[in-house]
Amino acid sequence: MTLRATLLASSLVFAGSTAMAVEADAIMKNYADMAQAGFEDALTLAKELKVAVDALVAEPTEANLAAAKLAWLQARVPYLQTEAFRFGNPTVDDWEGKVNAWPLDEGLIDYVDPLFGGNDENPFALSNVVANPSLEVSGTVIDATTITPELLETLHEVDGIEANVATGYHAIEFMLWGQDLNGTDHGAGARPASDYDTANCTNGNCDRRAQYLVAATDLLVSDLEYQAANWAEGGQGRTEATADGAAGLEIAFTGLGSLSYGELGGERTKLGVLLHDPEEEQDCFSDNTHNSHYYDGLGIRNVYTGRYVRIDGSVVEGPSLHEFVAERDATLAANLLSDIDESMMALGAIKKTAEAGTSYDQLLAANNAAGEALVMGAVAALVAQTRNIERAVAVIGLEGVTVEGSDSLDNESAVFQ
Image 1 (tube, rainbow, N blue to C red):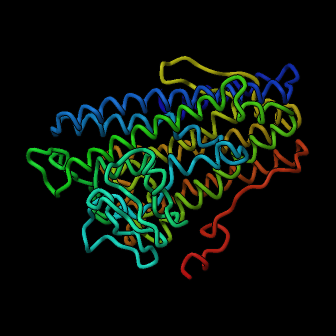
Image 2 (image 1 turned 30 degrees about the horizontal axis):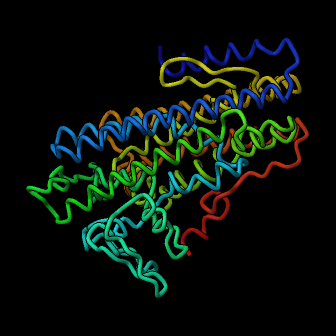
């Protein structure tokens, strides 16, 4: 079945499911159940990534490096779908930077090409923790003799600089792929497995590089354990989201609108087009951005329709925001679901193009009119669905929903200042 046919079949199910009144409290219980399931799935695959990383460090072969990369790619799929729970949930949004912060000055972590590294605005952009057992910050020397999860937490956004990303998926991504030096040409990072081979070490410090990779992966697992527990019974995230139905709906719609508009439509998508800059790709080392965009979009659809398919194939589903809107304005609800499906088709077209051999960074090239049109089609669809999200908020009568914006969408001139 094609993606369009799958979405249409799903839409028909939802279109006919509004015979009984849907309570906000029931919607938010299902919302919390989906969040718990999503973070549990992300944790499960992070643990599988940990197994693959340990195998790579123990036996640094190209086959084991490829297996660790695959495990990282698979681990991204459920995590990205949880991003629809970010905005509006402080226990997620305040935590998210630990696991998914980007873009990053990767020279803080490890060696980089001197022609493509450094940042004049960041004194730590070339600190190279892997190569240096100490780091001075504001007159204080940090002991990095042994690279541990605790050390990485200390270094993350060190000196208050957001580009100093030392933890999370993208730090691990860099450790597995290395820099992508292909610009807007095809190709991802090409770190050799010998970067972890202490007997035949390339680029020096293979033992410390292994320490860093293991520590970052251990920290990712523990961070996801925290968030999965946050949505289990008695967890703060679940408690806050389900304490009051109306307030919970504001949380849910804030997440949908802000991810759809300012974050995915703006910062993660249109900004890269405006700047023609592959550094603005979210998964820039691995050339996995097409999947990042797609599964973020799917997360929005999951939350709106109240249905999440787990990694084991089981389904978490229940009363939905779509049903709640449909009881008040059936036409608006149908239009919003149609808009979300159109966004999924547009994001799916980018994914299909990348999987056919034209990577996302190629789409950002200044002379690629067709690539720009493909990406901007997704931006337009995301903006359109946000407008109907805002209309739904008004129809329901929610007053506490604020949709985050982006200069790339709201004030293009500011992007170039």
